[in-house]
Image 1 (cartoon, rainbow, N blue to C red):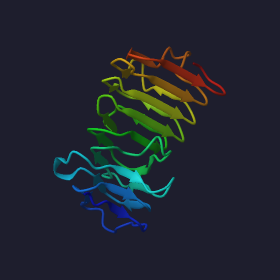
Image 2 (tube, rainbow, N blue to C red):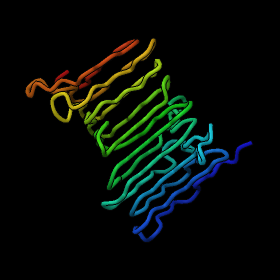
Image 3 (cartoon, rainbow, N blue to C red):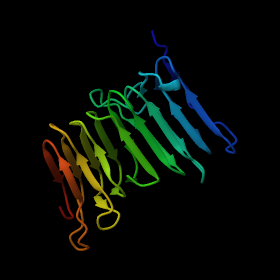
Length: 219
């Protein structure tokens, strides 16, 4: 059986010249408290290429992962999920001074709660296995800076407390390919921008498409 590694007390190690890596090849990583580092921070739940291993929050908002400073890259690697949609337990991402990367290879969700983000860019790369669900909940704006695709009938769901826009005209395309692949966009103050002729570009969607703008701005 696997043995889960848990962070049960808030930590903020000193010294940001190198990096901090927490890796488990036998049972995943549970976030029970905040962990911040002034440098690169890596969480790997499928060490050694294990076929299982998830990164989860022990309870809603139990901890926030932060990698501050100019070289503060945050990297999340798992095989069987990052966050849990059914449990309403996203992995909470705080301040990231560099790039954010999240990769889930085999099963489970890829579910993050963030601040304002630019998806698909060099600064924010996400990769979900074909057939899985990719969900990003932002407390600010979501900007599409590059292509974002889930294949195999997987789903993309983007939820913003602000707007969902393209970084520039045609900067990226959202695609959920394969039979049953769904795309859902929810924003409070706009999806796309009519005045700048910068729509959110939707590519191939194998299933349903839904877009909801709640209060103001364009759709």
